[in-house]
Image 1 (cartoon, one colour):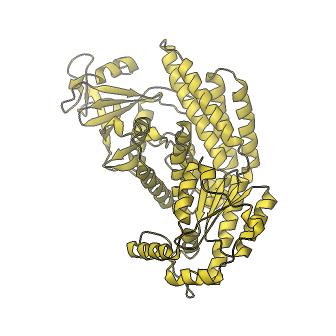
Image 2 (cartoon, one colour; image 1 turned 180 degrees about the vertical axis):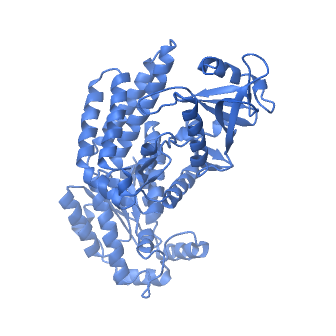
Image 3 (tube, rainbow, N blue to C red; image 1 turned 60 degrees about the vertical axis):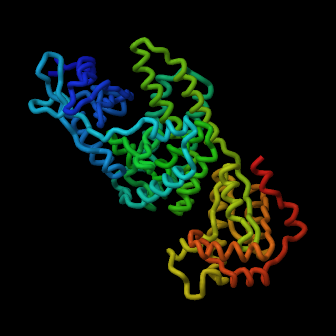
Amino acid sequence: MEKQWDDAALTAALQQPDAYPRPAPAVQVIETHISRVFLAGDFAYKVRKPVRFDFVDFSTAQARRDDCETELRLNRRFAPTLYLDVVPVVAGPTPGSVRVGGSGMPIEHAVRMRRFDQQDLLSARLAAARLQPGHIDALARSIAAFHQEQPPAAVADGFGTPARIDAILAECLGGIGRLAQASHLASRVAMRVRCEAARLAGAFGARLRNGHVRECHGDLHLGNIVLLDGVPTPFDCLEFDAALRWTDTISDLAFPIMDLLHHGRRALAYRLLNGYLEQSGDYGALAVLPFYLSMRALVRARVLLEHAWQQHAAGASMALTQVEAGRLLALAWRCLTRRRGPMVLMHGLSGSGKSTVAAQLSEAAAMIRVRSDVERKRLRQGMPPADGWYSDRETERTYNRLLAICRLGCMAGFPMIADAAFLSRNQRERFAAQARRLGAPLFIVSCAAPLEILRSRIETRAREGHDPSDADIAVLERQLRAQQPLTAAERTHVVPASDFIS
């Protein structure tokens, strides 16, 4: 059977329009390093290549069929309307022809999917400058919700352990070393990422024990996310290796963030990161995020090189791919060598525009924003305390959390924005002291507006009901009475927001 239907013969047969049960003029083929997708009419049919690599073995028909079934099951978690079924490919009525979905002894199997416009891939939309901030916001919410729904891995499963991470890293670096042109940068990145993996072994173990290793997508780059009916929808998850799919949730998110950074869209990358962190509350992930960003860049480089090597065997040049791989290695190096970021305190009364400015800064200057209005409610799981959201006790708890998050983020090399009122001198001094201990620069961005504007904004905010802040006019009046002006020493740290944006 396999002698008769070698890879080339089957590929040629599947490009014929009459191979499909419905009219399929001009069959198109999309090729990856391990699969081919045949676009035929209203459907797409994904067929595995009979390949065997160090990371996947599709050398038998049974292995390919099993993987089709696994892909269908896993991807229905994200896109149940996209993934339809697994269909057989059988011999056709004439020599060299096949029928998809026909009766008889299968010679191959395919995953049948609803076809979509390739221009609706997020990668295509990014290239065409059609990827909107609203798409990023929706993606952040959906990824966070999906991760939360998945059960955590048990420590005994062996997923997400430091040893497993080391093994995946070694395999990836080995593949790059085999396929890439030798370079000083590749050697430096390999040495640095191995050192980071060793340094973070304790953090990896803690992430696993605390339930952050889950069955994720595993291959969440922008080319594997499509707008379906206007909704960013992941598809084509990594189904062939559970060890690569059962991973830290922040490693899953790191792929689209890395992809956006690689394509020079830093503002969108940080919009996605901030949206996800605000939704999930998983700010502890910042400690390991630079490592996972570098890992995702290395994985992407390795996959591109593997695919290019296949084409090179057929006579194509690898020159452009080598350049692209070099850019990804450079991105990995930048992620691994982050300097300690500054700590920025927002300052101002309720309604003064702090959160609006902080949101702009977080994208324009690539910062992590942590919001008091969001974290205050997270600490109480959204249940109002008996003495109110803005009591002294609740305020103290909220600022303690903001301080802990800012400390962790700064240590990981991220510029941090604490989006809170900071009207108390004691609150400001605690953050300033932490910045001094970390050796991180401290800046204050102060926002102000006339009193009538403050009141108008607060009333509008309450009426619309979309903002996480519950500060009302009574809270504003209390702030006006209790606020402590910035000292002369504190004013030396005040900078206009435009300093970060320019």
